[in-house]
Length: 266
Ligand SMILES: Nc1ncnc2c1ncn2[C@@H]1O[C@H](COP(=O)(O)OP(=O)(O)OP(=O)(O)O)[C@@H](O)[C@H]1O
Ligand SMILES: [Mg+2]
Image (cartoon, rainbow, N blue to C red; front, side, top):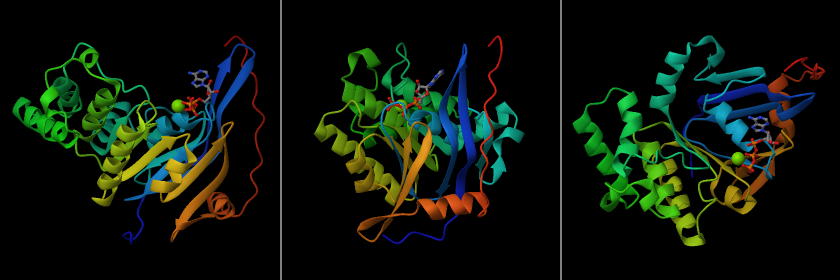
């Protein structure tokens, strides 16, 4: 498929996320460079605990890095106020979380309407749009059910519908098929692929290499918080572009890693 000229949307530059636990440091991410261009389908791959969800939270500016910078549309997000950031995030990015994050005491329709409420949409617009996106995932017949009254696959689809509520440019999906059977998982992937063809940027976290290479244009492979390799689709094959990505990230300079100082009393 031929993609439009590339416009950089999200960039992590030498990003680390460390958690200080008593005397030890958990390096959830350690010096990762990642670029997402508009209209791309990007997969973040790696085994359990490798830092995928951490990376996704940083890509979606839900979290801030310990070191390094995150750019959204070329702006360093650390320079933005949280309230502005929340607005941009709410409008631009739709999230499908690993654990769905549906609110138990809100109905299907209300869960989908929630992100629109934060954007200040009218109740009628919210209701119509909720119905529209729930129709897309074939759940407009479950508008008034609570999450506890839905199957796992249906909950996943509500989470997908909610991610589409504000017509985001970018959809971030953390293991969107992780809890589903093969058929439901296939439907979710076809849906994400369709959204991508219609111009949305998709960033999908998965531990399944087959899934990553079936759908993505670029795959970032994490291991123990470090970028192990980057592969890119060229025609039908994937080629290793790790060296190129690392060189571009550092402008050819060698990166000297700083030692992590142990924080006392934390
Ligand atoms: N709040 C936290 N405090 C301390 N350590 C954390 C925290 N969040 C994550 N970690 C650690 O950071 C590492 C990366 O976690 P992350 O959730 O990003 O992994 P993941 O690749 O998404 O794994 P999975 O495939 O199991 O979802 C793990 O070792 C985890 O234990
Ligand atoms: Mg995870």
